[in-house]
Structure formats: C-alpha cells, structure tokens
Image (cartoon, rainbow, N blue to C red; front, side, top):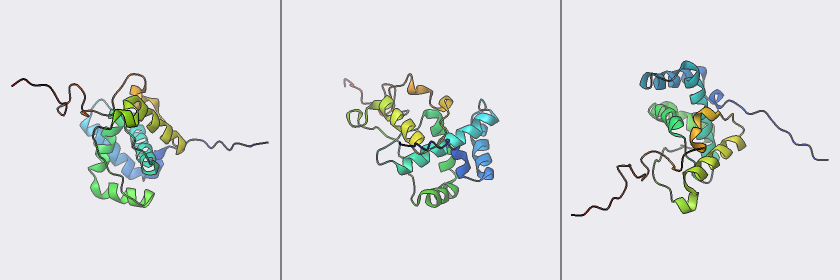
Length: 158
C-alpha cells in the first residue's frame, strides 16, 4: 500500500517578514490605485511563489503581467530583494524580460502552464486571480515581440 503525503499549500508571502510584505503591497498600491489591500497582500504572495519556483526551475518561467508588477516592486528595493534571494535560495534570481523561442518553450500558454505547475510543485498556494491569462493568452510577457510591441520586427518599405 502506498501512502501519499499531501501537504497543504503554503502562502509564499510568509517567505518575507510581515513588514516587508506590507511595504511591497503599499508600493504596488501606490502605483495602481485599483488594487485593494487584500489583493496587494495576495499579490505579494503570488510574486514570491513565482520567484521561489523560478529559483528552483531548470527551465525559464514567466510571471503573469500582474505578478510581474509585484516583482518589479520588489526588484526596485534592490537590497531587500538581493538579501531575500541569497537567504532564501542561495543565489540571485534575475529579472530578465525577453522573447523566448516558441518552439523550445511552447509559447505563452505553455510557458505560463509550466510556471503554474512549478509553483504548485514547490508547494505554494496558487491564486487564479493572478494568472487569468491561462485561459486566454498566447504570449510570454508584454512587449516580447508581440504584433504591437516596440520590439516587433516590421516590414518597412523605404
């Protein structure tokens, strides 16, 4: 008989102090007035779950646009972010936006699905409100060579 030990998922927001979590939530709320206090608190947790999953993944992962906003808030607090990465993972988790090869990484939906699976496998809570594009998107992140991206190569007749 095989016994499966299913542990409850953990709120990754607990990876940082309550003070830092509140500071990051306040930073995001100051920039985006539509974000409620509860959503900001949950968003910090989703961002930390993403960063933790990224630190453990051998393959690239991609945040949702909303989770990316929270990651930007943390990255801008450079010392706190660097200290967190080194204490939690023993290495720095870089924010490297850019276009990933669709064939190699499965496009946006495949990449985002891998991200969500990695967060789940790492044992963190997943809040679907922060990953809505799993049902609709087919991109990896904003301005990553999309048709309306400033980086998109267009055919221009001179």
